[in-house]
Length: 264
Image 1 (tube, helix red, strand yellow):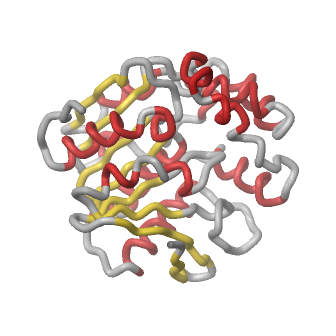
Image 2 (cartoon, one colour):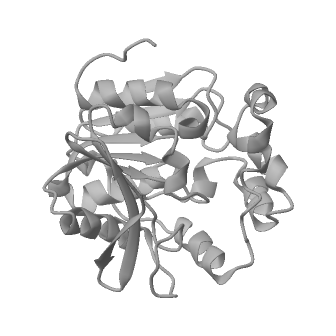
């Protein structure tokens, strides 16, 4: 069920499921909280899972002005406080992983444990680290016409053969809308800060077949973040929460509860 909290001039849409320690989920650039629909039931066995829409995404409503990565981190902090929570675990996927890093850097007292999936460090621009940034930017700019080609970057081809409906997962994008233009500009912002300043115990997860953020980019962050662990998810592309929710949940659950991933 969709619920809302007011945080300043932003009305944040979220869903909450399960009992246990709170776990905040942060979605990627083109996505909304709906990307976690298959993941949440697995995590809700042990956690109170909170999936929300960032500004200019999903059902959240806010001022029609440009925002930054810092703004999104502050939005997340406002949501945590509005829900009356002290500290939360955080999982961020792709650009959501950058929001998660920004939250951990700007509001360290709110973050218990941190899981970063298929992401890159906040001080760096995407196109400085990922060699195919130009091609992806072109595909994103021409959505929805390029929806099927873009899906091939986010999911391995064998998986798309099994789930052909996901070839159109980006078909609902409206690249020319004012909201989409603002979101694109927000995704391109960076944040001054050093991963070495992240105090929360951190798990880095990379898809073996990720074409959007090469696994080496994500895994390299383990050398900078204190108390970091890292794992590669075999056969998985960029959109892990959609392709392999059970496997992703195993790793998140084990790290947050400080064990080893269960085998299903």
